Image (tube, rainbow, N blue to C red; front, side):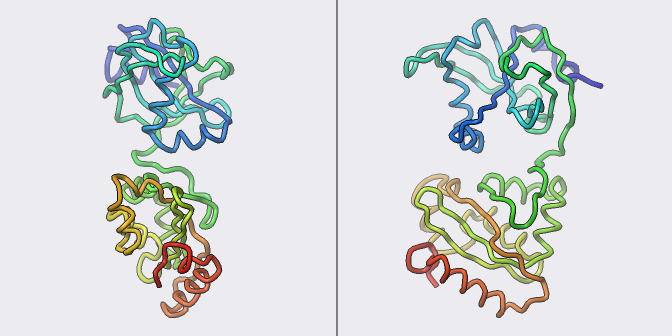
Amino acid sequence: MITFQELVSLKTDILNTSKVKLVRHKDSRIEYKEVIKDKDELLEYQREQKRDIFKGADYIVSFIGQESTKSLFFGVFKVNGIGTKNSKFYYDLEEVKICSEFKERVIIDWGNNTRVWCQWYEKQDKEVLEILPKGYLGEFKGLTNFILEFDELKKMIENPDANRDWKNNLSSINGIYMILDKKTGNQYIGSAYGKMGIWQRWNDYAKTKHGGNKTLIELCNSSDNYQKNFQYTILQSLPSNLSNKDVIKIENLYKEKFGTKAHGLNEN
């Protein structure tokens, strides 16, 4: 067994010579589940607290709570100061590159007392349960059992070795997929066929943001990072031996079902 403190000590001694707090962010509220999907929003969420919870700390080491007592390492932040905002304490937090190679990879056991979400670093021995491969997206849940944000899609495509199950499954089938614009509620229906199936088509989206679709290009050009509004999901998987003509026929049926040509993002 190795503890998180021992793992960090292999890289640096700075946390052993500073005042440090461990923080575990976990909330059952729907709005929080949306916040943790966007790293910038999570950083803002962390800065604002009802109580002076980071009092006396030079650094905070942040984790995202998972199932049971598991906690995923999110990063190390230097506490540069404190003020007030919206009648709450507002911290000037600066992310530092301490053990950044373990960010979103190291899972620890927080221990039995998960209700104490902020603890002093030097008083704890948090067991490291797992070190995930770099770029690991998570367990593949089935072809029609997931929704990916754009950043998740990009992470998956850029790290194929860490996400072999995703690549093997998505490259072995043709299919009909949907892109949802969360900002407007509009939908785009597309199809993937040929070599590498859905994996190859989604690779285009990860690299270009819009996959060459005229309407999506216009949206991406309308503002910076507009692609972060996009969600990707598979509506139906199709066998790889199905003809291109038959795949397009099924795609057109879905466009009619969802009305994406009249009210959505499909132009044809």
